[in-house]
Image 1 (cartoon, rainbow, N blue to C red):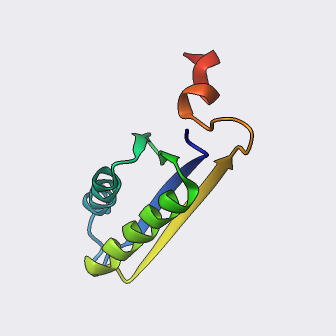
Image 2: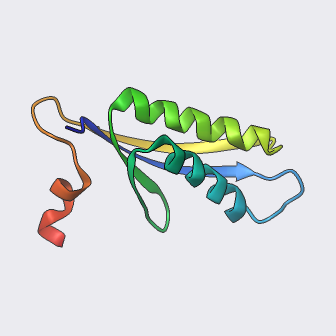
Length: 97
């Protein structure tokens, strides 16, 4: 059962003013490698699972940006968690589907 949803928008500053999309693609690879449930949306990506694990994934995304020589990174994060009920993308959006 998923306890949290975490949405993240990663905004890397590139060293030489390059397009940031290839860097965002690298961040999404980190999510894929983590094996967590996720959904890429136009302005952010939502992850579903254990909160501590999801925050660790975000930390790895930021580390990857620095490995790629980004001088700075902004990560905008939103967290939704439930103690008494599953927190899932499907549950929160089912009335719109």
